[in-house]
Length: 209
Image (cartoon, rainbow, N blue to C red; front, side, top):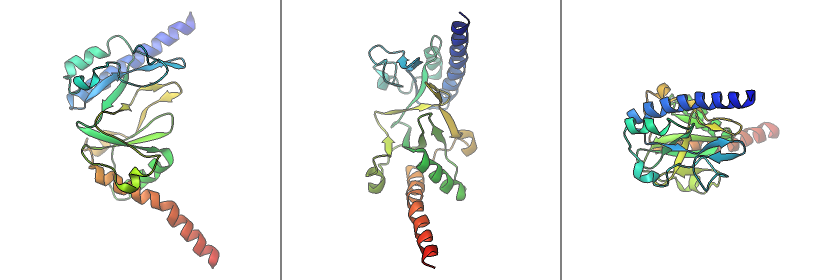
C-alpha cells in the first residue's frame, strides 16, 4: 500500500510539473503535445502502443498542432503524459549520440553561441533549430544522426523515462529563447566530427618526433 501511495504521489508531482511546462511553452508558441508515459516496463496512455514510446497520445496529433495554451492545459489534468514537441512547423531538432553532442556543444560554447540542447536517459542529444533546412550530405550519411522535421516529434523535459528523466543540457533561457538556424548547429556538428581526426593527426605527429 505504501509503495502504491508513493507511486501515485510521484505521478501527481510529475503531472503538475509537466502541465506547467506545457502551458508555458504553448504560450510561447511551441507546438507541444501529450505523449505516452512509462508504466513499469511499458508505455501507457494510448491503446495499442504500450510497448513503444513516447509517442503522441492522440492519433490525430498533427491536426492538433498549434492548439492554444488554454486547451493544452486540459491535456495534462488526468495523467502524467510525456511532453512532446511536434517538429517541422516551428522548430526542428537534430538528434545525435551523447559523444558527438558533447563535442558539438563544446564547439558552440567556444564561439559564444549556446543553443537549446536536450538529453534523454538513453544517451541521445537533441539540438533545437529553426525549421526548414535539410541535413548536409555528410551529416545525412551518418546513421547516428537524425533530423526531426515535418511529421516527427521529440520529447521535452521534464518527461520521465523508465530509467531517468529527459533534461536540458542547455536551457532555452540561456539563449534568451532564441532558436538558432539549422546551419549554425550543422556547422558545429561538422566541426565536432573532425575533432577525432585532428586528435589522431596530433598524436601521429608527436609519435613521429
